[in-house]
Length: 420
Figure 1: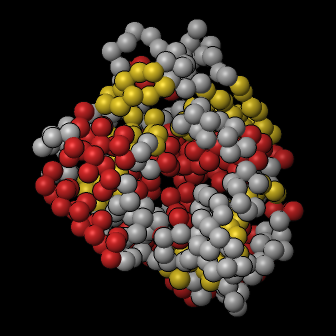
Figure 2: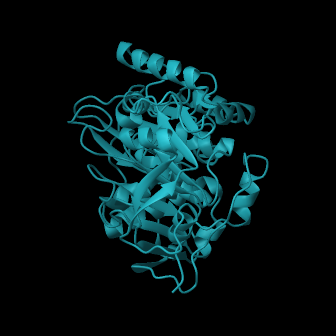
Figure 3: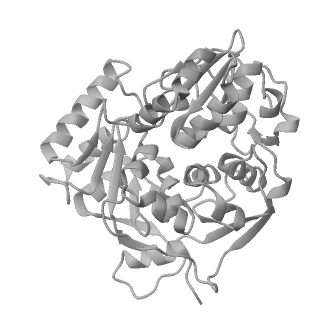
């Protein structure tokens, strides 16, 4: 019997000859990731080990992105502690104001997450790196501390679910719609601690930005990871970025999948997740007309160049509806700069939108767009739980950038064709 992608990657990071789903194993970690929320706790736990140095200062990445620039005294103190630790440890890949970005946009951009590697992050959306063929998976701050100390961590080998998209996607359907469609089908616990593999002719044609979006939201189905086999698009993206050589894996033809889902993409239209779960999904044809107070375009899910270009295409020579706040958040400084060079920032500002420095900000109810009681927001972020973006009486609707941009212009949830 052949092996799945996740099994091959895990096996390559152990001293075992074979592995199978359900086994508890120790794996070597290629990169350990933390942010300004999770790293302070990891630092405290690391210091309890009595060790003076992390296992490898070039294999630990710390990105200050959730409440950065500091939103209040508490976040300022957390960031101060983290900065001091990074300098004390000589952490090579430490990113703060001026060079930081949203972590799951920044790592792929910098070539820090690579095919065949294991990236353990103290952030649930570390699964993003599966788009590059890496086993990116989230853990807690104690997992981060253990990995910083030993360069290893334990895992249970997961079963694999395979999702095959064939057919042709329409102009306004992207990776966000495909993953929302899956969530609507299997639910928020439909892939609980499973490896999700995305395949089919539609996936093989997807730009990297859309692939990253899909893998990013694997955790919204409970997935351990969301993998896409590396191909020429992957290699082209990594050319000039990758910080070291990498190994490409794909599932064997006779690999054992727990279940295979097949979808006809011709039938999929833009999707909208209604409050208060990412699996409460409806097609845009059933979502149009809901009045909104805010539109957020950005986050680790949809804050990349491809996303901003789509939003700008919709908003060019248009105005954000009166009474609607539109907040655009480029994923990294490089994306911000590229968007300026392409004139996208002018389009957003001329339309009446606010453009922010890279930050997670409103996605987790941090700052830069908190909702009041009774307010509704459409957002390109990944979660819409009760109180996720502010008051527990607010509502968040999830969509792709085209729908979020069109909705900002119309003042209500809208299909892009209603604006163009």
